Length: 437
Image (cartoon, rainbow, N blue to C red; front, side, top):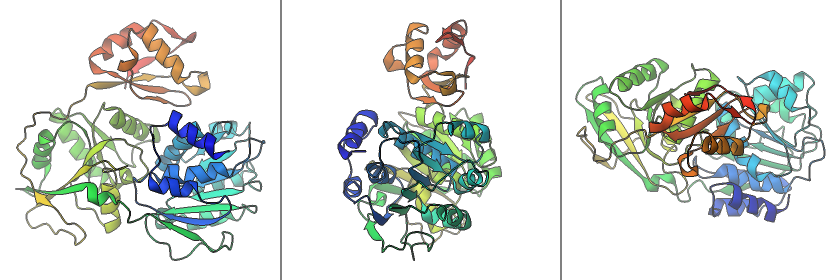
């Protein structure tokens, strides 16, 4: 693709109006060679590596040209959502565990140009003889440090040894790499280091909140009732704790969602959509939610439990103060609790339990049981909600379109009446089940 086309697509099809310095720098690298991009989470690195990746590709020619490997399902989905709207004329598919293997196989009926995948699922397709990666010329290993930490070294090696025609390789990492893996082209890598440039820490206010008891639930409730309206993630260290906190906050009437590895993939994806569109602006999560989630305008992070490592501290906090925005970090401490050396605070705060502009949900999420595979587009949904539901375009929030479903943010006050009204209508001559998520 030509760079002018890529940049034009970014302006027209994404929320980005101007590239940041890292993205500009990556747009200038040649489309041959090996590059290591060091960048903190939340810095816009997905778009940064997408630009040279797309520049390296030819028009669609019925062959896989590029592979992006990422260590989590959530990150795979995020990357694919960034690449698709700007990769006009090229087919992008996402492969990951928990997704229907048959649907992934079906998506290969027309050979994709770009595959974004977790290492294990990509290797699974290769073993089944469903993929020929000998034509791949460009590779991105995103969050390579995290992939090693999660034990994906062997899978990545086995995949990459199938990529015999690589010309462009990009590795991204939050920390410097000791060495480029031996299974990649033996080229001296060029390091592009944005790890210390405009770090999110400069835009964070880290606040200590003392709990009078070892059980921090009451303090957490008071803190959430004290904060201004916005989106917040509360981090705890164990699934059982996340469940307990979620149940307690729900009983307090707070608009809260839940996210951890014990939920099925669909429920996890729904939780992120509801956080992003404001239906449940508070999310209680394990550290699974600390990476790979594309959540705009997160106003605060709360550490209910102390993070177990400096990396966990960094990545939790990286959910806020993203893309030059500011964010608040709250650390709830109890008497006698050890505070790790890597946690430093800027000030103390005693929550009052009251806010002039409290966190609230004015949005509901409308669920359709039809999606892309039923030939439904976002435009179809917008037209349907305006023509049959009586909404204005300003009342229609973020639309998330999946293979067999769609989620739409709508005014909460109109949710029940919309379900009643739309249940009698057809969208694009298709009868759809419509409900509130």
